[in-house]
Image (cartoon, rainbow, N blue to C red; front, side):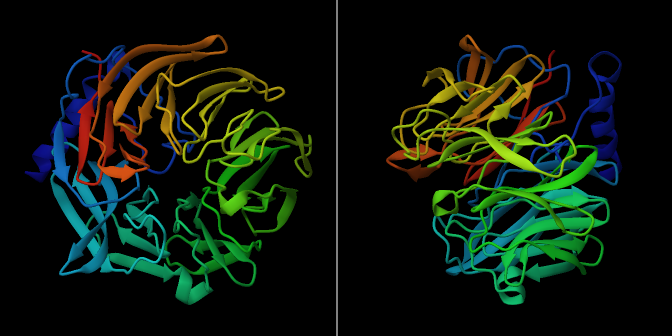
Length: 436
């Protein structure tokens, strides 16, 4: 049966290869290139307008905010996701590996954990798959390296007991980053260990860097500035660039955010870097030609979550294409900004809804965008400086968690195998989006 499933996965992808491109994976937060862009071709132009999108499969899982990851392990397409369950009132976090073609659970690993964080509805961090290993971070600071083939634990760390981490209010969120032989993670511990690099094979600490009283939630990313690779860490008091080889700081721009809400992944175009937070709004940073210095070139004028002028996202990462910025603000406003100065071009509630913390994820695809809003809708739309144009919308998955008197989903989907993989607190699903 295993051989048959592998052959079916190969045939499914290969059948599109000559005309529509090979299947792609989504092996980490942000997809193959860590930039939240879906690059597969041969995808549907429109969605059905009535009823729930037809599923390839649906598999019951527990609660959680973490999005899924999709990758090949030993030529087998797999889906990795984390959740939280209860057994006789004991709480467990789990790492699940599913067959991407059938939804059948291949293996699972679970460990007991008591939650002390706010919104205690499961893990938050997307798994990372690399070289047949899966790396996960639990809400309470458990870092695991598992064998992706069978779920065996290869090594692990407990941030609280080993590094003295003071957990952030909403738990550990930032997905770790694989770079060469390193696994780079936000730890938030004592003695310059806000960021720690581990040998990805053994878990041995390689270097540590930066201090901050708070950890933050934004994942570390690596960009090139001035011909040198720089690890960008947006933490609650600053945006810092450090050398990914040794952890030495290159430059730092102070950028304090209220309640430690550095969440969105920093976005880069050319020598500019964009970040935006819920209370304090947007900041555009410009890095010098040699990559050794940086400064804020414009910022929003509001520190209010309600009376906002720019973009104040809570969980989503805005799109920055060099000329324009698109994102969802603090009360559900889908907005466009002029990237040269931060001026608002337009706003609409058509793709979202109006309410505090309203959210939608935006994923560029070719010359259009896929949006997954917190009501479980999947939308195809055009976003331009002229405005929002909705092309089609369908129900992807039901919202299952009550927040602010509404039902929500706050988990980013994965786009791979010409499909979308999405989860709520009850199930994880696969929907085929290939053009036919």
